[in-house]
Length: 174
Image (cartoon, rainbow, N blue to C red; front, side):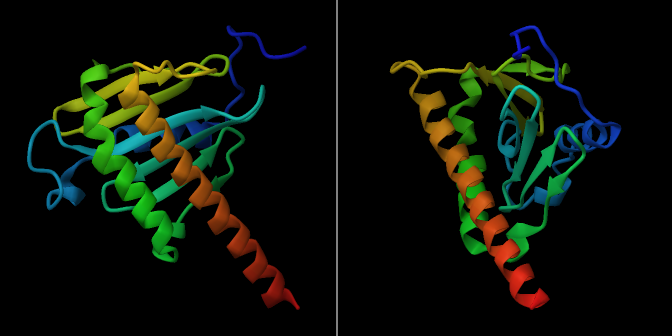
């Protein structure tokens, strides 16, 4: 039966631990970027891909970008090899401050239900959250629209990196 809005995703313990570590990652490694208490240094976004696949994208102000899957799979470390990914990830986090006024402070990190994307912004003063519901983002929600475009760019760069890595692996195997 297709996923209903109330259905939850099946997740592994590894996924929950990694996601929790990302959301609670301290700001200290990024002190050269983080001056004010509301400067965003990290972005964690839960992105439903299908009725049974949930990904969590984690980006930091230094350009690091990783993706984790609810089945325990992951794609990490690409920012060390691919400059375009670093630029896209940095741009997302650097622009996340524009979304902060639309967010609320939280200590609850529930997984999304249905097709809703959950966004967590990490600041010195705590974690802020908002969400993007499936469908069209309203015209007047300019901050959400801009943020959505930026994180789609990061996802696209991650996919490009994965394809390059796969091609490199195939070449090396020959």
